[in-house]
Image (cartoon, rainbow, N blue to C red; front, side, top):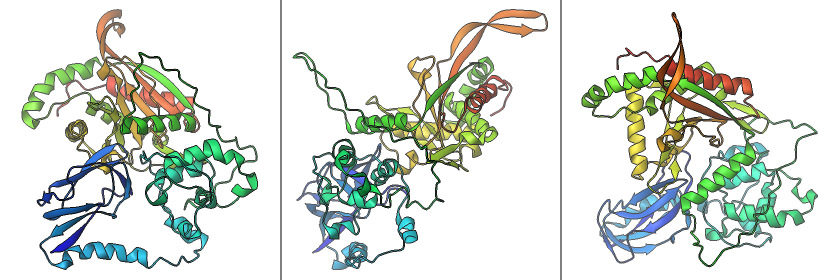
Length: 465
């Protein structure tokens, strides 16, 4: 008999960790090849981890709600194969052993070793106290991308992070630990103690010059006390709800939100879809909705105004080459998730339709892959699907703009004809663009949303698909 070490598989280029949601197999259970061992969560995507071998589960190395790093051993399975079955796991473990004696690195090498600050959900909670961490733990202590991102925003140095005791697995520093430290403990630390190299300074990007009148960081406002009556019901937020709450609050604190509105006459677009939808479904075995049409118009407008397809890093503007459009999809739980169509400008309308239907269907079935919600550069949300005529959406960081499309309603409208103005029944809708006024001014934001509306209004009713 041999023991096989099951590793947490790699789930995408930008995914470094996952949270154990539920074990579906217990110690002592017999397992077949590809049986699902456990369910995990990365950011807002839930996934299943299948067993790579058949055998008997003898040990679970992580409990539910614990955070696991990609490549870590999560379970032991007893198999009938040779001892070499666990060789890949032994090779994975060999590298960290050689790092027992830390060696000082040049600043440039340290900077290159720090990964990007993707937004990852971290729901591990727990109390902590402010006390120095052991020296040997500081040398190679792991920090999640979200923790690094918060530290960079708050100008917290690496040395300062190393002094915070974490409540996660093996003393890992969680997002909740860091936020609690910022709100409660950091105010008691002398300013001189924080004047050391920060995560923001270690980023590989070119140095950023800050002016002497740089605005102070936003102070954290204490949450007001809430009274609870005897007949009131207390409902705990689910995991995704907590992540969305944190992300939306962070976005409002990060970006100066402004919203511009445009009303569009989309009669030709509606009549065209009514004409082609039956034949399209028969030919492609896919339903064509308005969403791929909206995405096509957005992609064209981004090409016309590429400075809407950017991100902000301090005083630097990162102009994105790829046009990756996220589309907010409603889940059965009532939460929203944003799968991303990568390089949306390179798809024709048939390709966009298939991509939209595939991502929306797998989002509702909780079958999305972690990478399919990452690296968006612009987001579209259809508030019209809920019967709303307009909305003021919150920017999906680190993007700088999000477009909400409202419900299409029949309304009387004034038309200019060669015989004079007439009133006619037209299909009308509102488009609302929320944008980051730090880098997108009113002229760019207003002109961009107007251009999207122009593409929809000027739809060719005779277009072939």
